Length: 374
Image (cartoon, rainbow, N blue to C red; front, top):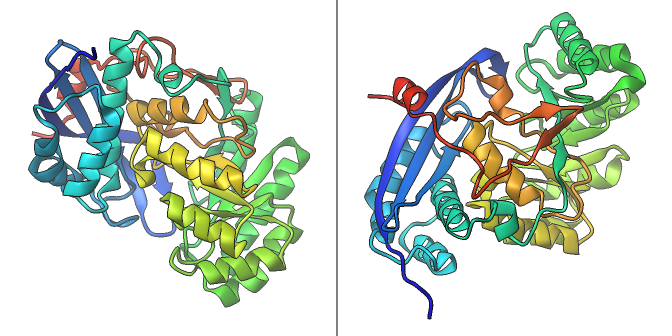
């Protein structure tokens, strides 16, 4: 007979951590990273932790850290309190019934449930999800200072340190011709030493894409991420058929239905997986299954989560047979400090999957209390 273990209490806090430098995107420039950290207490004494993080407040998506905290405390957490924490699928269904959307908050809560139950079974989260097929995953770095020479110097330094050999450039915030010149100069300086990808962050019109992607393709760029608005899947499909450079859907794919529609439209070569936009580690694997069934390559994306969210992503992505385009799970490296006792390990162009029960992490409560709001 299965033992019922109830959810006793759920705490939700906002944490602000400083970044090593301003981080430029098409819609905003980040000077800090704000995370919603959730702690779920179970009646057997186990603590599950989870994270909900987005980029630039409301500038990037439809959820803000403050809104996520409010949604969890007002609607989502009350639906879980007193319920059986071991029946995670039932609780995921419950969350879908009490709240539409709000995937960031659901991701944090799903992570808490998985972390807690995996600890209870003395399994790593990846083992609980069926087993890791990778001990490490490749991880790229985003060059986002906005200064061409600084970005080139940063890339060469990271290559020498064997930390990253794939570099993403965030473009779309200025004249496309200036962006293309910036990318072309960096690709020329790096040559065959590194791959270069660009993330347009939905900033270009389809007409701009026709000549802009061609110029980037001719410059030797390896991949173009979400060049048009996420709602315009037909434009993405037309661009996919027009160019040989790989086209990746990011903001356009959150749910298994999105993945099915993109594959039906033949709209992309690659899909970016993110636990935050899909609703959690189990939820993102459902998206991955659809993409894999359609023969579409996978990429492990990030919303620049800290160590908790990054570890949850790593455990999920490590269970996938193929992640052809690697990951961008560098969020913790963008921060000057951390709220966990055992930071993630990055070396030889890879990031290691954390060991130990659950996420394999422990909160540093002194740091946590120092950086949390209020």
